[in-house]
Length: 313
Image (cartoon, rainbow, N blue to C red; front, side, top):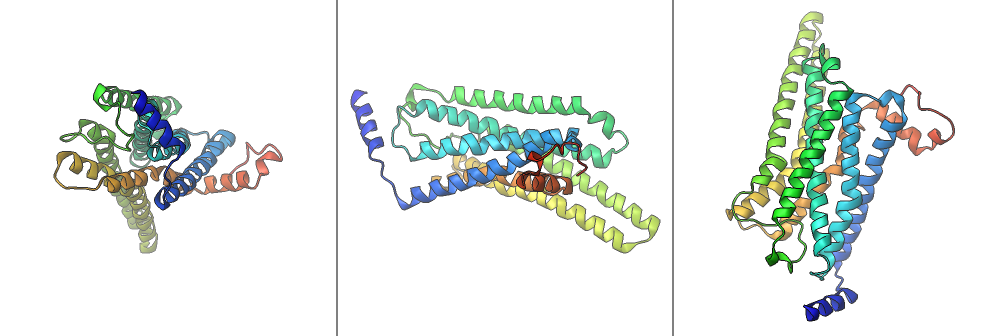
C-alpha cells in the first residue's frame, strides 16, 4: 500500500496533460460558468421581485438551485477526478462526487416532473388550480423531490462501497451487470410521467384552441394558438429527452451487454445530460417576458441603484 501511495503521489506531481484533457478542462469551465450564471439569474429574480413570488416560480427556483449546484459542484469534481491518476486518495472524493451527481441530477429531473404537474393543473383544471397548487402544495412537492433524490443517491452509493473497488479509478458511471433498477427510478419513470402529462396538456390546449375557433370563427387565431402550444411542448420535451435519453439508454444497453458501446461515448452522453442544467433556465425562465425583464434589470445593475422589488415586470 505504501508503494502504491508513493506512486500515486508521484503521478499527481507530474500529470500527463494532453490536448484532449486541456479541451475537456476548458469545456468544463465554460459549461460550469454558463450553468451557474444562468441559474443564478433565475434565483435572484424569484427571490428579489415580489411579482415572481408564486407557487409555479418556487418550483422553478428549486430547479434553478439544483442546476446551479450541478454546475458549481458536480462538474468541477468530475473534471478533477477524471484527470487524476491517483486512485486511493481520490476514493472518498469520488464517492462524494457520485453522491452529489445522483442527488442533484435526479432532483433536477424530479423538479421537472413537478413543473409538468403544475402546468397540467394550470391548463387542464384552471378553475381549481389556485386551490390545489398553492404555496403549501408546492413546498411539499419540492421537499418530496429532494428527499427521494437523497434516499436514492445514498442507497446507490452505500451499496457501491465494497473492498474490491477501493483501488478503482473514479469513473463518471459505474457499469453493472443486467438492467439497473435505479435507472428506472432515476429517469424512465419521471420521463414517462413528463411525457404523459405534456401530451395531455397538448390535447387540452388543442381542444381549447378549437373551441375558441368555433366561437369566434377565426382560423388565424386558432392556428396561432395551436402552433404556439405545439412549439412550447416540443421545446420542453425535446431538450429534456435529447439531453438525458442518450446516457440512460446507452448505459442500459452497455450494462446488459446488448451492444458494445465505447466508455468514452457514454461519458460524453453524461456531459450532454449535465448540459440540461444550462438549458433549463432558457426553457423554463427565458420563455416568459417577466423573467427576461428581470434579467435585464439584474444584468444592468439597476436593482442595486434603488428598491425595485415591487416593480411590475
